[in-house]
Length: 85
Image (cartoon, rainbow, N blue to C red; front, side, top):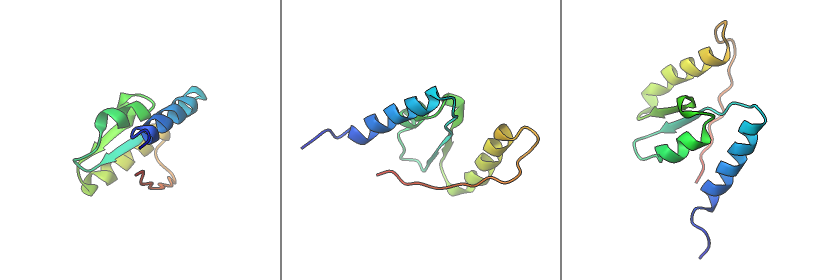
């Protein structure tokens, strides 16, 4: 059957490489049934992981991330949603 954790292992290695280059990784866990431990490991640091039990929380989270990225206030932020299965 293969390694069931392959996708998680590869994405953690990739995230480690990206973080090592100085790039910040923000992670949003949408829904109640997410693996928060895994998503926190993907993020640059624990404070870069945002749990979002419902989509109503997303506006606040996007604003928080935008404010932390753009110290003078958010200007234009492009959000590209991705679903990893």
